[in-house]
Image (cartoon, rainbow, N blue to C red; front, side, top):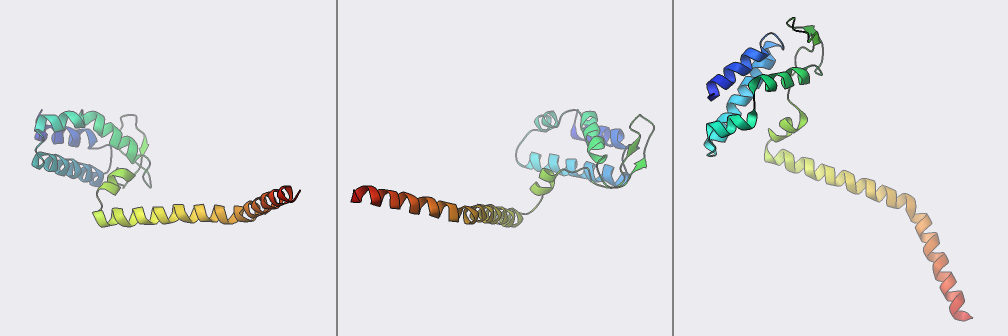
Length: 146
């Protein structure tokens, strides 16, 4: 199977099961993905093998699309109500499509949030830690005076 057959099989498996915009979004994504991988020196057969069966990929997209906003019925193949709209993309796919500066900002914000939580917990525990340290110091002082 070549990339054109892969894309056509994916499109055929998605048509009628999800909205047309979702079909085109996913077809465009995989066309671009294959093109980028080819430019990076990977072989077409290797790329397609890594992607797997386009019908299985389509089923995954259809299932993921069920959780998008709104519902409409597409096709009569037992899928019943499936959501309208949405691109079928998950968070990691969305994240990887962002520029590097967005990754940097998100990393800094996450680090700041973790530090905020850590300092909040320490601030709440500080009075108890202080009492324990003072009590231990007084105990040592009293033992030394005897």
